[in-house]
Amino acid sequence: MPERNIEFGKYGARGIKGHEAVARQLDALAGYIATPITARRGLIARLHYLTRTDHARQAAREAGLTVTDRTLKAWLDGKRSPSKANLERIEQAYRTVRRENVARYLLARLNREGRGTRVEIHPLNQSQVDRPRQRVVEFRTLNVRCWDRIVQAWVAGDDQELDDAWVDQIVDLGSQWGQYEYVTNVGFAA
Image (cartoon, rainbow, N blue to C red; front, side, top):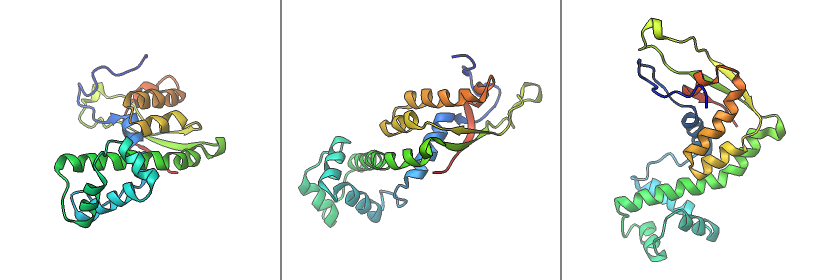
């Protein structure tokens, strides 16, 4: 695609890919458990979330948490502690199941029956770039009306698809959309 940055940061510009900022914001809207998994309270909260119903258990197994019910019970009772690898599996399964559970709600809130959601795009940080090499890039807003591809890619954890879906939206900024491929922040609320 035209205007894609090949050597971003070569002259000192700082920022993150726009789709990564969108994923961060969607993660914030998903409302994950704040207590870290390394704390007993955080572990128990995640295990309860993943085991409270048969549907949740099945989703956790599909997401990669493949321990026996006996092991889960021992973890919940505090008789045993999960290994570091199992803690990572629990966290990954929790995030995957949580994303799937909130996706439909977020999609409805973001699409707002076709009205869409206003997105604020904060440009990249050029404070470390020499004056002659700085571009004029300003704060922009955009109304995104169709969030389906973005949310589906976020749920699936597919960075390439999320990037493509996000670029399809920012092309609406006009001929300078490539200046917003890297940003400091993307903000929206649902």
